[in-house]
Image (tube, rainbow, N blue to C red):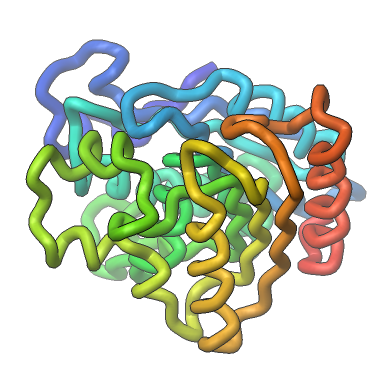
Length: 265
């Protein structure tokens, strides 16, 4: 089952093909003892050009094993550029909250988990949010798009010196405006209202430098935002659940424990 984010054409859509229709794929589990469950929206990576399959459904099903309902977000990618991926992610959070009662979800426990460029989108969502528009004609738009927590896996964070060039150009074009680069360098946008965050990275990531996670963690610390940071000595980029990498796969256990401490499990 797929759930389009908008009942009609998405804002800025240039066609009606699959790549023009951002949507969620739900992986719901029944409420526990009639109590609503937490939910996490999974945002696969892919350099803002595609969606990593191994960073979608397998992650959603792992979250299900923890007792968390999940959704995989298929957001618009190049040739779509900013602000469309962010609009899609914001709409996804609003939509899950709007239909929370129907799906047995607690609207106050909606998190976001992103990989690589999907981690950039997740961190953008966690630093560029609003409380919703109470006067909106569309009831979905009345809900806040602020996630209740972030899980960032080898994320692109900065669009400045230590960025992933492919993600930068696919999101903002070949000659991006310097101020826009700064506004979407999310280490510069952290405030005390940024959601609690779990980050992990490998120290020798050849595609997205580990400094991305370090920069975000440092900003969280300066603003008093709770966070956990795990840096593993070695591992290629794009490991996903890392089940074939013994040195790194413990991130799923650490993350599950962190989710439990945050009241999600």
